[in-house]
Amino acid sequence: MIGVKGKVWVVGLGPGDIGYITPEARAAIDTADTIIGYKTYVDLIKPLIEGKEVVSNGMRREVERCEAAVRLAEEGKGVALVSSGDPGIYGMAGILMEVKEQQNSSIEVEIIPGVTAVSAAAASLGAPLMHDFAIISLSDCLTDWERIKKRLNCAGDGDFVIALYNPKSSQRVTHIEEARDILLKYKKPETPVGIVRNAKRGKEEVIITNLEDMLKHPIDMLTIVIIGNNSTYIKNDKIITPRGYAV
Image (cartoon, rainbow, N blue to C red; front, side, top):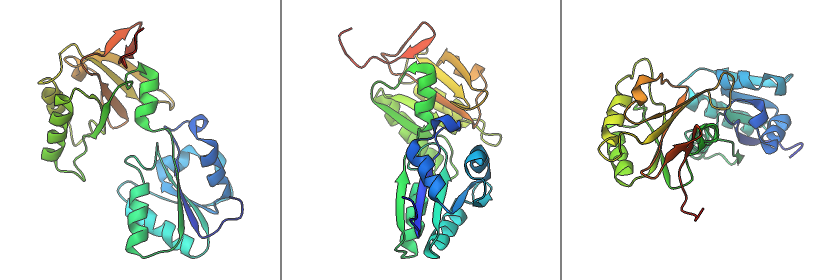
């Protein structure tokens, strides 16, 4: 990759700890002339980007960041557009590709995968994702809440393990309550639930509870909530979803 120009690497930084950044992601960051990203994520990698041009801004300016990445790559620069977790899962990859196509740009784009939040949270809980699972964001900024509720009903009816992203914000406090009530139609009250805040990042907090009691615990935008299926159980303070092997 050394010396490549006119290219954007969309880089997954993983959950936040530099130790969880993949070698390929670090190589892309090292090679890039310019680093672009949400300020919070750029701050996480400060030790890796000394001396580089940095373009950072706040939340809900994702399109601006992608437009800047395309523009700088068109000028011949190598750009690392950084994204938390995996850039293809609620990350920057899709937006960058849409902007590139909308502008009819011929720049090269490479997506560098990363450890996503649900994988990081699951690792701290044990093995809750060993069978089919669904990831559902409770944020209705870009998706209608009625559609999100439909997805919750479908996933609950299918007995999926369900991971909830963006479960609760200061402005959006009742969606997690509605989601819990929907899932209680399909899952037992004692269904294991894992709540992980700052997964694989500093000051990680892990709570193991059940579907009936989950709202008694603090949940915010830094939290991933994983709700088991009807086979999931808790043993020695770990959540396990059997895959079906004869053990």
